[in-house]
Image (cartoon, rainbow, N blue to C red; front, side, top):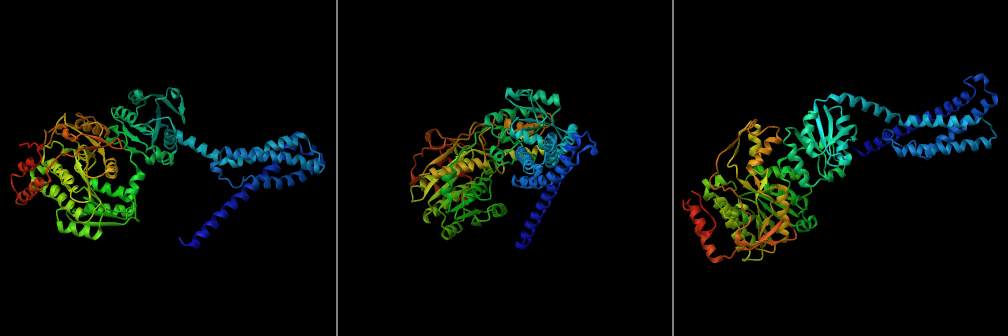
Length: 627
């Protein structure tokens, strides 16, 4: 839009306001003439011929002067400036004060002009003019209220029967929108709230019928089909408990955004989202030092390997928000790299980004990138991670995970990288698979390389992340969409889980604490049974496990164990300023011997040796090979 068009648009708006003001002023003048004439007419029993001519002359003189003064006073009280469809108590208060001022003025004018009129003329005229002038302004609100009542009756028998959990501000907003919307075929039947004081009361005409423990009974009583959780400020434990009750009802479950969106006014039916399985974990949200992260990242050249993966792409998102001097996104898979590149261009167009394709196994490619861009911080997320696939291709796990890390670490030292952060895994602890063992060797490389130069090397270890590529949650969702069965390896298998954004935020936070050589261990909370995870996902999808969707147990896969561990016994544990981040004590090792083992391992995997697992077991004594 050109500046000329904008100017014209503002002129049109101004003209529209002036026109509305003149229309309302015209109604005010008419109201005054009618009101005081009716007052005089009433005084003489509604017979015009009985009204003395002196009073007729007084009426004409006073009302003209009064009309001019009234318009002036109303203008001074800004009663022609308000948007009357949003009229409220403030506008009403100004109307009352303005009319009181006018009542005083008309009496004074009568005295000054020596015009004597009946007392009822002043009293009745004042009351009628106040009612009419106020009524004209609030008529839009009255019409809207009448329309809302009609809509409420129309939705009385909506096809979707809704229960609201939470009789607070968010609940009221959701109820009002559901009732008034012309496009939503929903009826809000009842409200649930744990506050006993609210029991039996009404929220926007909807009864508050019980607390969380009454949810199953109220679902049956009111034939509820959808439950909306509308308590954005609740703690994670309470939310988990209520969601666990709701998921047993078979209803569709929705939830409002967090408390910050509520404060921003973003709570609405459009902002509702389906309850996810992570909502049932009841994890306390991670708290990070945003200022510390900003100062650590801001203005620096930061490189992320594996940038197109689940962890790598989220690292790029969070790093980009802190406005680095340059974000280098490095990945071998061009489609994923392209996706995150385009996303960041849309969301953060001002951030400098270099999207580069290549492999961390390619020494020349890695060296050329570090020589050209001189990154100050490297987050190394590139890795093969699928346990069963790596069991069948162990040499590839070693080539990519171990020697990709080793070559990148050597380049980091040679080109003066200040900090190198390895993304590790809980599977590196007492590994039973080649993938976990390869990541344990990566941790050893990090500890050794920390002694080789000025670069500070650290590793951050955490468990499974919800929704990552190849994780159980997307697999279960796909199986549910296909009608089952949902496959679980063992009914007793347990894993630690964390959301991707939370894990990445803690990784960046841990990298700030680094002094070199540490293995940071993230607090993953309580372990989760995969069987419970599968059953909860089925219930959240509106089905009943083993009835609508069958669960099949397929047995542990090669290299898989029932329980993952986060910390080796010999590592010990130290605290950090963040209670969700701990430090494992480095294990004693011989760098010289380790380098010899790496040379032999590289030779073996290059020639596709069949002894690769046994050689890894010699390097990682805690690795237990499963035949």
